[in-house]
Length: 228
Ligand SMILES: O=C(CO)[C@@H](O)[C@H](O)COP(=O)(O)O
Ligand SMILES: [Fe+2]
Image (cartoon, rainbow, N blue to C red; front, side, top):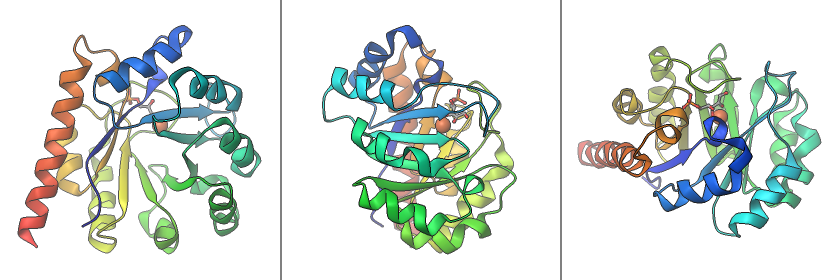
């Protein structure tokens, strides 16, 4: 069991005029990585930022924080090299957005980034499975991508459980509506990379929320290793 508990705040719900400072604040509060949501207004009905912003963020907060790029874009092939040059560490693309996942996985690796593969709520986990041994992380969306602050979809948890049973050492991320009320379900199902936006960023005490989320996942991982 190679995976560990990691919490990655999504800075989508933060004060975007202060993005650099907000990223620093999340890292100071115990975040393990930063989840950066890129939306192109086409794959999803919302627009955020692209590689120029990532380059500025990297310059602002230094080389260490791990940037997990959640690419909610229609042509993920187009942004691999620019994102790598801007300082992204992991490129998480949507299975629904490409006709040739194998080629894209190869391009991402050749650009020096880790590979994440995301599925929307309507996509089955069996469609992701053929790629699972070639990727670093599977992202099971627990809301329809596009906006922060939506309700957690508990009915996505069987996808996480199935992936964990089939791929015991894969990093599995959940994203959307995850916070203190839903973290137990995610952790029990087998998720180990936890994206949390509004629950962390809008809290008066983000440090405590991050610690709580992480402890629940650590306990679930320990329990699973004892049960084996
Ligand atoms: O990718 C997305 C939404 O499309 C997410 O990363 C959200 O931005 C997470 O925010 P919360 O749902 O936790 O508020
Ligand atoms: Fe996201």
